[in-house]
Length: 66
Image 1 (spheres, rainbow, N blue to C red):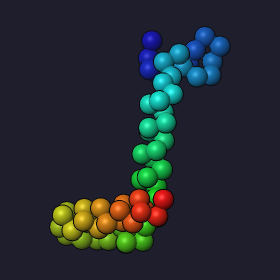
Image 2: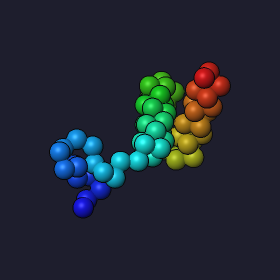
Image 3: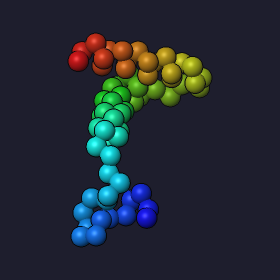
């Protein structure tokens, strides 16, 4: 049975893991917050380490605000 298949009566699959879903949701929310950070969204740097530094700084600001 596939990981994404539905149960006998439809709905959620029998392999649904609630803890894994919570962690995935947390990561998705964090990525969405970074997407809305203007410092990250408007960067067009040629160097990867510069962009990574800006993303890390934005993540730090988001973390400190929560």
